[in-house]
Length: 355
Ligand code: ADP
Ligand code: MG
Image (cartoon, rainbow, N blue to C red):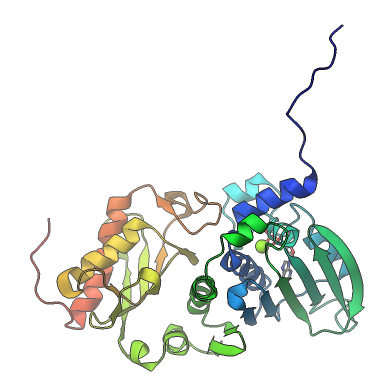
């Protein structure tokens, strides 16, 4: 018989596994903000208030008036791979309409922070009763108590990465971390003008949309009057677009003179999901051509619709990138849609025809 030999290969404990997984989902405060805001939107919220301190490294609080959770729901929500959004792989194949669906956000965020959830259902037997407060620290539920709270959900994430010092060390300055948070929340605010979205950093309100307006009103709330007044509509579908997967390209783009030296003001969406993709950006920049100086970018809020089978939104675990079957056509379609809008407003100098 063989004698057992020494081995260096060992089983990791569940907390270590969870923390490693957390590193892939939650890279920085902005990634936690994204997951929490998506949950609020998925919960049908009419208002989502995001408060962060120190760029989100000390505190992230997302409060919504969505459907809320009862005690059983709250307990389930922090367990691993628990979701109310899909039942199996078939639902993924047939296309998910909710934003989050992997059932891991709360669990993983809670494994690298001190997470508090306060929630009370909007409807049902518990609607009028007390809410539930659940505290989850470093991967363990440490308390569950009844609490008075408004209908809806408030999630607080404190001391992100307190138990993963290596990751904490990789966080950038407060200003940089906040810029990432701002970008995420801005994108949701612009994509959901019918939801009142606010963002507060270190006690200062950065913006607040009313939730009553259209895209133009959301742009005004987020970027201010100068930018809002420089936006023109893009509205192309069907025959107005060259052949390709996109069925429509709509939104707002700025006059060429209203530009910045950063890409962060390009907010682009595919089937209502905030994404970045090279062909989309190249299409936009192609339309402006030489109207923009080197390394200058317009303000853009552009919604692209494409049949689900022509676009893969799951290429990236954080779902910010998309991949199209046919990049060249997407580029041409976006270029044509934006160019038509700029031409219509007399904002392009004549340009050489392209083949
Ligand atoms: P996922 O969003 O992928 O389902 P999460 O870990 O983000 O996974 O959330 C787990 C579950 O908790 C959700 O499916 C939902 O049922 C519930 N939940 C999370 N956040 C909220 C919220 N703000 N309002 C209502 N329910 C929520
Ligand atoms: Mg989620």
